[in-house]
Image (cartoon, rainbow, N blue to C red):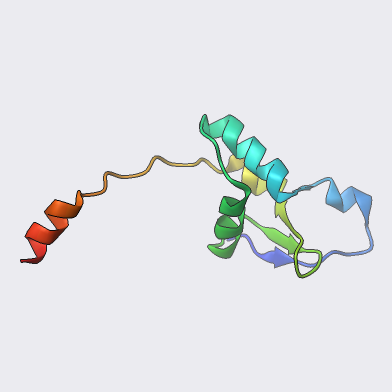
Amino acid sequence: MPQEQQPNSEGDNQLQEWYTASEAAKKLSETSGKRIDPDYLFKLGRLGKVGTMKLGKRVTLYSKKDVDSYRVGGRGRRPAKDEKQANAA
């Protein structure tokens, strides 16, 4: 399972293996065929679906390997509000 990593002294070579949130969202949008918001990457990182590296309080990078291999699934059918209320009664 991907984990959060810390930057080390390898510098630029290591950073080439990471996407910013906007770069990762663009890549996922290309592979999924639908628009992916950069905020979605935060959720994927928090759920452990993609590896992350914090560069500060507001900057997180996402593993290219994990993002490139991740496939965004379709959303399931959600029951209508009326169906929920009927089932609750």
